Structure formats: C-alpha cells, structure tokens
Amino acid sequence: MNKKDLIPFAFGKNPGLDAWYTAFFLENHIDHYAYPSKVGSPKQVEFMLTLEGDERYYPCSDEMFCSIMSRKKNDLTKESYKIIYKGILKLVDDLIYSKQEKAFLKTLIKIKYEHEIEQNIIIPSRLEKRLYKIFVSRTHIEDPYILTKRNRNLKISKVLNSSIFEKALNSMDKSFKSFSDNSLASLKKKIDDMVFKRYLAFLSLDSFWGKNENKKIQYDDLIEKFNTQITGDGLPHLINLLSEKKQKIMWLTSEAGEIVVDLAMIKHLTKQGHTVVISVKDSPYFKKVSLLDVNTDPVLLKELEDAYFIHGKALSKNDLVEKFKKNNSIYVISDGTKESLNLLLVSTTFSRVFKEVDFVISRGPIQKRCLIDSHFKFTQDFINITSENNSVCVSYKAKSHQTMKFSHQELEEKAQLIINQMKNAQENNITVMFYSGVIGSIPGKIDTAKEIMSTFIKSLEKEFSNLFVINPSNYYEPGMDADDLMYMWEIVQKSGFIDIWRFQTIEDISKSFELLNMEVPPEWIGKDSTYSTGCTKEIKIAQEVLKMNPEMQLIGPSIDKFMRREEYGVGSMYDQRLVSP
Image 1 (tube, rainbow, N blue to C red):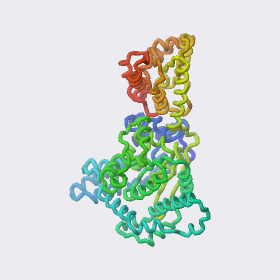
Image 2: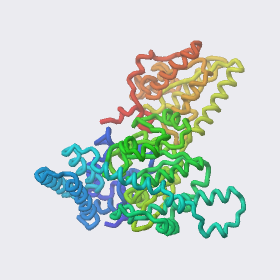
Image 3: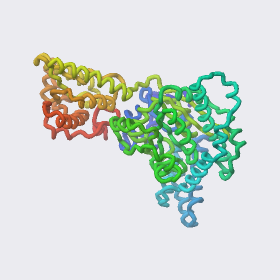
Image 4: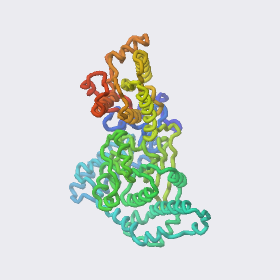
C-alpha cells in the first residue's frame, strides 16, 4: 500500500483498513474514548496540532505508521522491536546479579515481548514503555540509570566550567577579521550567535558522549569542532526566531549529559532576554532527564537554583499566566509522561504551556522522527537539535498556517476595551449588568445559545431604561476556546464596574424561545446557568466580587445549585464529564 493512500488517513475508503486503524489506537492505548483519563481529548490535542478532517495524531513517524498499517512484518518494525528488546535485556544484565532472578526476568520479558509484537501493531515506543515497566515493577529499581546520568552530568559540567573550554569558547575566528559592520549592536549579535553555535557544535563530539566517555577534551578538539558545519535547514530559522522580540521558548529535553549543554545554551538565551520553559519526564525513563533528576542531581540542582518549578498537571490558563508574570527567565515543568515522547499522554499543563509559548525546541532523534519527520502540522514553529555521527543537525518545521492564537496580552487588551465601555456607562449614570448564561455547555448548540441569550438581553434593554448589558456571546471570536474566554472575562468581572450580575434562569430561557416564537427544544428544557461549567466558575468569582462590592446585585438560581459542574474538558466549553463514557 502506498504512503499517499495512508497519509493523511481518511475513513470510508476500506472497511478492513478502517478497522485496523481503529485497532492501532486501541492496542497502543492511545484512544481517548477508550482511555479518557489517560489520553488527551481531541480539544487538548488541538492545543498542539491542527488536524485535517477526522484524522488522528499518532506518536511515531509517518514511516513507522505506514509500516504498521501495511500489516506486514517488515525490516523497519522488526529492527525497531529488536533494538528495544536488546535494550531491556541490557538493563537486566547490567543491574541484576542473581542468576535466578536474571533468568526469570529475561524469560518474563521475552514472553511479554513476543506477545506484544505478534500482530505487528504496536508502536516501538509503546513496546519500550511496557517492557520497561515490567523491569521496574519487578525489581523496584525506580531509576536504573541514576548513577550513569549523574556521572555524565558531572563530567560535562566539569568540561563546560574548565579553563580549556572557556578559552576555546572565547577564541576569535577568521570571520571577525572581515566583519565590516562597525555598530556595537551588530557585533554583540554576531558574538551571541557564534557562542550559541559553538555550544551546538560541542554536542557533535560523539566520541566524548558515547563509547569513549572517559576521553579527556583537548583545546584543539574543541576548536576543530567549533568550526564544524552544522547540518540541516533549521539554524537560519532558529537564529531568525531569536532575532525577533523577546521570545518564550519551550525546550523539550532528551538525554542526561546533553542536558548540561542544553542549560548552558538556555542560560545564554535568557541573558538575551528570552524566557525558556524546560520540559522533563514525569518519572525516570532510561537516560532521559526526569523530574527526579532536576530535583536531586547536584549538578542540575545548582544549574537550576534560580529556576521556577511549575507544579500541577492541570493548571488553568489563568494560573499559568499568573506564574509567567513572575518574570522568571527559566521555568521547569513535567510533561506528565513516562516515555520518550507522546503528545497524546502529556498533561494539560504541558499542553497549555505549549499553546502559550512562541516556539518549541526539541532535542534528539526520537523527537525529530515524531515531530519533524511526520506530516502533522503543529500550532508552534518547531526546531529540532540532534547530534549523530559526529555532527549536529538542526531541523525546522513551520507552524500550521491555520493556527489561531490569542496571547494573554491580546486577551487583556480585549478585556480592557469592555471595561472602558462599562466605565463610560457608569459615568453617564447608566446601570451596568453582566449576564452569565449557557453558551457552550450543550455541545453543538453554541449558535442557539448565543441567539437566545441575545434575544433575552434585547428584551431587558427595552424593558429597563438606562441599562447597559454585557452580552458575552457578542465577544466570542473564531479560534477562542474556553481557556481564552474565561481568562478574558475574569478580568472584566473583577474590574469593579458591575452593578448587577445576572445568571441565566430557566425562566429566562423559556422567555427567549417565546420571543423567538419557538417551543423550547428537549435539550433546553430545565436548563439554566447552573448547567454551565463556565457559570459555575463565574458564580465563585461573583461571590469574591460581592465581598469587595457589597452594593452589587446578584440575581439568578440559588448558589448551592451551581455545584453540579466540575471542570472544562481541556479547551472545551462544556464539562469534561459530559463526554466521559
């Protein structure tokens, strides 16, 4: 089967292929509807990707996906499976000393391995996670490579802080002799770019990172490497991105040892005014950088002593923006996963950070295959940095042209425009009412919700003179999700310019349909603002505002009836329980 027949995948062409495609997601445990508490919802995935039609994201390269969809045990899948199997067996050989325990573990892992690969449907990264989990759960060794990782980090740290490295990093090259621009700003920019490139080039010393980890670095080795050509199409794009306004960058880490060089580059960027959010694994996973590493490794502790750690796997947009306003230059988050890279399993906090930043830097070949070497379009520009075969490749993927994004500054500006209207109304002795009601809480009925809200508000304004009503449905713009709206409205609601805060009642909705000469549809019978997740959040804000402004009138259903709603499905405008099986 040709690649063009599979990418992008579309249902309806071949029932057998459709079934295999569905089984692919189920067997890899990456189907949201089968595993809603573990796999991100479609709306959460939309924070990171723009998908076409009914296509779904998969955490592997297009090549691997096509290989699995072919239903044949070809060289790509067989070799990928074997590499993972050997890696797990190496763990057993390296860390288990009892012959009996070693034999038991190897047999158990082999049984699981043969079972998992029998249908040739499992993604290699998912196979790796399952086999790794067997090792960890049976041996109770939480972090098998903890000493290896610490030794690597310490070794690299010593090199980067050595006089030899400092001398080489600060050495002049021939390009400065021909530098014709006499401005200090241009000279500084050239120096900054060169230092960054030299850190990148340092990653290409494969002999230093791999088998010959005990090799000592010489000055001439560094100078030679600093002049090595960096491959790929990404470096000019990266330099261009860094040349624009001060950027907020998400940095997806990879291996121990390399993280120390990453941090040197990150600190170099922060000195230029950029902000970097570093993402690490939620738990130890081979030699990947984990939350445990950044909290216990002496080298990383020192390097990140001034960083701000964002805890919590489901922070709201409001909470996240408040943390970013602390003006730290380096933040650290967990991606919420225990495998190399899987955007379907990342935490909601990770997804929201992904959405908020200006672009993403990813590290290593696995991330390159999944992010760069796939047809998927993301909501951010991607830069990947990979060191292989004594060279460094920097790759670039532009964000989707369909991406629509509202920064918190833009939302604050929109909120201020509304506040100015409210303030102007009060100055002219006009009563200001904020009307909270159902807009997105009934999936697929947003247009109807907006119409009945607007109809009722028009009737209020006709009935009462000198009344200015804020109608939230008038301020929705395409591309806005629940996160954006709640962030904007909370600023408006806490402005202090609301005289009456009215929450939609059953009677309001009935009156609206009556004004429209319509019977109340079944899905609207008995509904009011207590059915809305947003209104549940807003009633809590209203209570806070009432304490500061006791003169404000609060009209609507009794407060105790609002407690039925819990939390938005990420990016959705309705309660997450409404889509739970």
